Image (cartoon, rainbow over all chains, first blue to last red; front, side, top):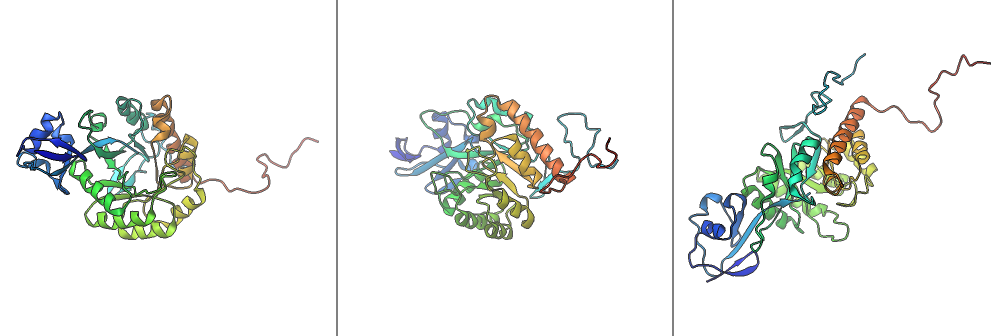
Length: 66
Length: 272
């Protein structure tokens, strides 16, 4: 299936838990905030949140800024 | 001789003016210098810059992760005891700022937020109206709100009334290093606004920071002036000293100005 991640359509395994996706992309779940279809996902729910076809996922983190 | 200065404080890293902490949202901030974490050629220098500047508060921005090129988090370069002040840069409306603020809070690094709503690309001047709207929402949600604004009294009053923790008027456009172009308006805010006034943006030289502190602003926030210096650590030290000097001058009280000369030496007893 395909999921919109940060505005780009990406191939993702059906029902993949969010924390597995982060790990497969070499992202540290502690440093990344996720917003799924407009709703913020708490870090404690990363393991229980499964992705579905057509989901819109935003993955953000802190960068340098003024 | 009476002086508020503690001459016993010989440690150059110790605060020179005792018991002069800045209080924001009930929290004691020892340093009146707040810095940003952007624009460094190498983020590994940030730790040394913060040490030199003796900063307690540092700003960060929230951006999409680059899935093709995951980089290390900026948080790896910021000591854990600092207060993180995420900004809402990239927001063009109040709603976008609120969304960024909520995402920032979900990162689990505190509830401080610098509201920055900008829809002008040339001067990056803030939209005070949208900023006020975002502030009203975020204060109600329990954020410690520090809005970046054009120095406009009516707006600053409304923000204070809405319960923001401080107002952060600009001295000059972001990253311009042009100093306190808004000086007279800043002086009015200092006089009229009861919550902390923090000059944010435009400060290019330590003397700009000292001037801001001399007129009585509570703190300064700067990024570009340090980050783009060939020697950021030395510049951070210079800004720390300038902020302390300006603060001390403000507390001491400046001597009166006059149009004509006022002789410093006695006008009697001249040799004839």
